[in-house]
Image 1 (cartoon, rainbow, N blue to C red):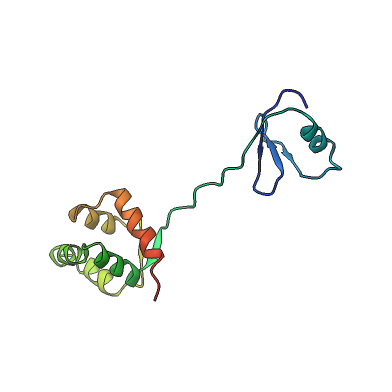
Image 2: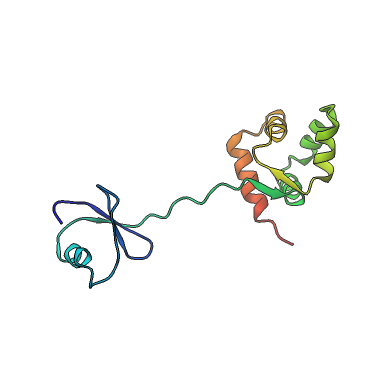
Length: 129
């Protein structure tokens, strides 16, 4: 197998980092048997970060805004926007989309940066009744 470095997968298989070769965790597989017998370093499996939440039910987002003390500021920004579509969406849309330009703009108006909006969506996704 040479002087290669490996990484375990979440299922105890291994991946050779130099070329991405997948080595199944099967003692009958010659590469796997040789890997286990060798002194080759095998890095621990590190799970990838979960994907960001990009859509939440609007009621959950509104509950979360209330919990964060931002609901009134957002409602005021929506009212002052002069945009009927934004007003209707804030009131009646079933879902909010993280990358909506209107949502990003409203976030800026009330002092929420991109990370804070991401955190709001994450928190909203966990709201349950």
